[in-house]
Length: 172
Image 1 (cartoon, rainbow, N blue to C red):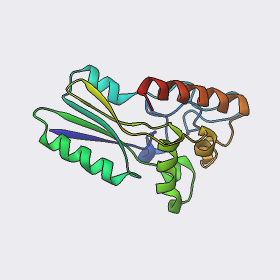
Image 2: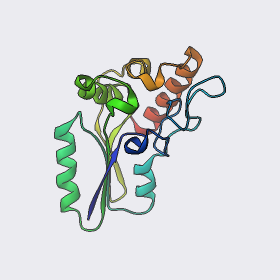
Image 3: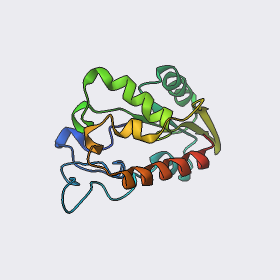
């Protein structure tokens, strides 16, 4: 059985509410940016690592902006004996606040900044499947989305530090 988690980082089809997959700082209808809040105040859950911790034989992350990587992972998942899980990041034009023609660009920026890492865990063995030649600053990714427009420099720096630490842990 292969489960593909289609992640647009909030409950988009019911009104853009925050979820456990909503990234820190994002503004949603239930974690709005305003005088009393700057948006989501917790980092998103790393569902791929949660699944791997439960002993799933094949776990991977993917992006719709890297279709070749995604298809290789779907093939591996289908060939896996036992359950497989793929966590697919999908930018949402409405919830993220960008024009539809920028969908692929935004997915690529997520990966190129390290905000979304591409990796797989096969029978407990971790492997990065794509490393940007040179990571871009996370502000390029954040500033392309309306849901992060309210962030101040201090908060953007916090997010950059979080992404840097995440990339170091992943070996990106």
